[in-house]
Image (cartoon, rainbow, N blue to C red):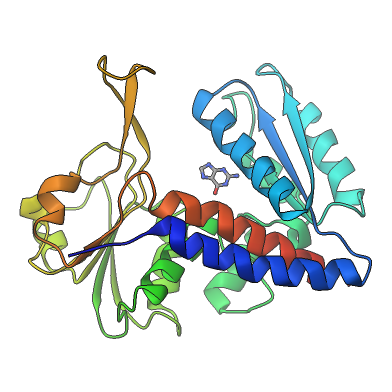
Length: 289
Ligand code: GUN
């Protein structure tokens, strides 16, 4: 059984980014990323801070904008407009999920698609479906593809089951797997799927992106399957200092005993998401020339 080391693959992606960043800097262009956080969601705070920290480590320009949890739609649109016009900013990310009064779709549509390093804007969603390489691919599914590739897992001809149909992970993941790079046969399963366990048992590759702790159990996994766990869930645990532990969407121990390769949580997909964000930001800077 291979425990897929996301930190190691992420380090490789960031090494490649570093080279590209120094080349751009030599031309007088420092890639810049703006990260917008609305409200106080503790997990979002952690993600946003780690994104900004990674930019600093790599010598990228970054800006963190924090809006109060009662910010209005117009407040957020004003920030996006300013960032769209800021020549030092090549990538804009508005952390999801925003508070309930914010219409997230409208915010995403307001971002200049050339700066949409999340790949959530309809123009980039279309480019992904069209396999147009000038678009931006959402970071988490892009990271999953890179993990599969660097681990030497053959996706071509494989039966892949994606559990979850979100715009952040499930749908783009399915497009990537079925596209020219993945060449897999893809099933997208979700909360209404009939006999989910049976569908999952057909899979050579399972991508778990449901957002429910330890949802995928050993009985749902074929012997020798590859399991990519996208979930990062906080589970109450009074024995931990923070009062919680992190758990993926996969019951790790029992599934690991059955599969041929699996990503741990933490240390699997998580580090890849940030690495791909940096990669997208560098791409946006390059494409701005
Ligand atoms: N929330 C969880 N994942 C993501 C992501 O990739 N981008 C943004 N903007 N928010 C998220």
